[in-house]
Image (cartoon, rainbow, N blue to C red):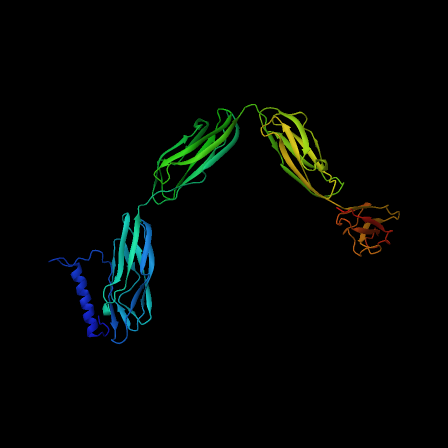
Length: 453
């Protein structure tokens, strides 16, 4: 291989550096032994004139924790910041588990040029490791280098649970719930050894668990734990699923809770816990809305009272079919209407007092009272009238050319809800002939003043 032109001084420097490195690694009477040398690079400057300067960036690399059997890679930039051409021939990588790749040697770097290569850390055992990358030899004793460090970490399992608590609610004594499941996932990089999955806590006999986890869960694998609740006594009951394994944080737990209820107790379920009536004209009754009450228990439900309470109970009315008792599995209906007595937001509550748990049960009621103008007129005696149009103005004789209603009114009543409190409005009505084109002259004018709030 032919080398570029170099000065005698450059060649001597290179040879001296090489000899120094050889003496440092050679024992008395024994040949040189390069234990950690994976790749070496030397540099040679072309031409005697100018300056030579090589740099490595970054100057140190910290790989942090890397799992044994895997690797982590970072990129290094080698730059010629001088004014002379440099030929890189070899470099030295030291430290167990460190290696370099991506640099084809020899490599020529012109003045101001740079190249990149990669350094990897692939620990084979646990523990901290240090190393280095350095230019083995260069003109004018240039030895750019950087330090390497990393820690090999043994593979380990890790547990993630889809839920850390299961609540079963109320359940009659002597009956069993449907199963609830928790998924265990091994998010680590080593097999999870499962020592035991057991029910612990205050009331473990009121719960049951089954699982398909076995003795081991593979890395990134999962298994499921199914739990049921079968109360043997009334009252609040609690337990836990406890998992013992070789993951950090063992034992992991899933809390369990439920309430045992008497086998002969009523239960109440309402079809709605809130009703909204929206905007309704003052003193005009709304359309009715219905609530259904169901006895979901195992004994008759005794109804003491159904009443309207809250801020504006008189703006609402209720009628019901519940009577004094509702049989097991039976139901009754409560019909509510809203008749606002004033403009603005109105609210109340329907309160049901009975012998079920959680009594009284309530449904919130809400609506908004609005002002309006209700117009009525006498039907036209002319035959062939298809309907009527209503016109409005804010000054006498100033009714607009566009009717308030987009389609003919077939009756003789119209409610104008788009009015403002305190304003006065003027109205006229025309009739529409059966040809749906010809309209009569306007009726006599009527006026209405909307009350102030």
